[in-house]
Image (cartoon, rainbow, N blue to C red; front, side, top):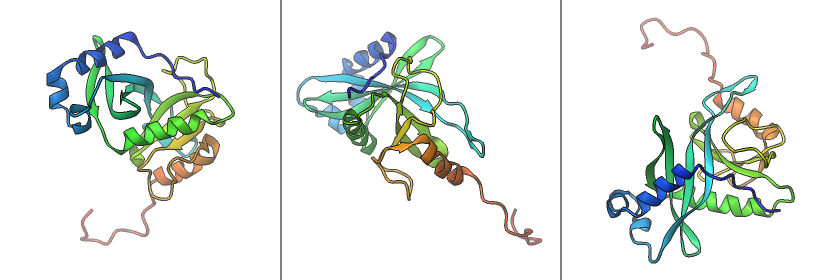
Length: 199
């Protein structure tokens, strides 16, 4: 089934195209692969980036949209990514980057293309667990900027994933959520603190 990628806001795309056309922005980026790319580079596959700030014992808290991420393609592969952010004046370019999440995102998107059910692609960041997932949302008609993961949505942890959570395995939210809730819940203190010990 084809994967649905929601259209990015036009100003976000324009800001990335402007940055790609700026020798200064490309030269100052910490992205050797982008600086040494042979041939034209293009921003593709815009994904809305949602952040999950808290996981409570009752489940997921609401997510919030923090930006749009574009994979920067050169030839047949992604060499970097570009993030945009919402400012008081609208969408603006934030930064270029490369590394394992770029390769992992591209791989997860290719995996998602082979699924039988259509999904809308998003990214979901869980900062408390240092975790980034490809969020496959079941409502393909949504605009990609709102909502929270439904129990039947899929989350595909990107590499590097937290210990004990396999990367690139699609998990229904209902299956992965208890694991994330357990990981995010602080352990209770065992016994009373000893007097005179540092607090």
